[in-house]
Length: 115
Length: 112
Image (cartoon, rainbow over all chains, first blue to last red; front, side):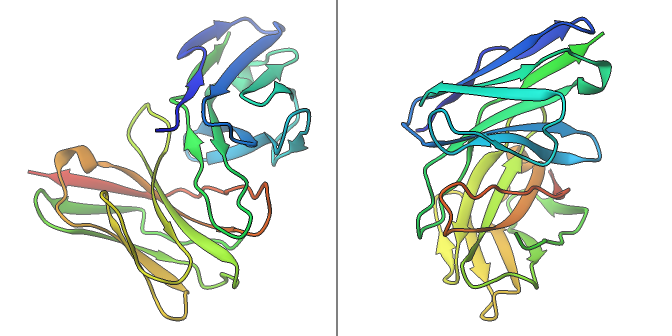
């Protein structure tokens, strides 16, 4: 089974802090994704990476950056945390689809609270 | 990616089949239908996906209409642990980094 591991289940940070959310997958997947999930808004894509050192903005990249130095690890960075970034953050990975659909595999999420 | 429409909520009795519908009338030829579910406080879990043929795995069956404009996820013998939010998503299979856009999903409640 694919395992996607997020480093923290719960995190509390102060406004203005730089925050790192780490995600590691063990299936050699090229594609990795960061979503945030908020009540009433569903899952929204922040950034994704289709290979090492590659990154693409998703639907809501403002206030975030990412790093993909190794294939198995995809980090989400909040440059200066704000209270409106309080949310559940979900990491996912996927093989490149090619001509066949392939599913996303999710971690269990990091619930971040910014005070 | 094509947009999907799902009922906001559904109920099902334990042991009965749960049939969750999804409309995706603007689906294009190379787009797959994916189903995920999310149990409270966990990450979404992949269930099944298909292009145009019906699919079955150990968790569920996926029935896609011939015109591909709608589909139904079938949980053949629902249990209380199947209570979750179920997401139907349509996404292209041809790109190497196709992203999946999640809507609001269907809240399925399985009751004793």
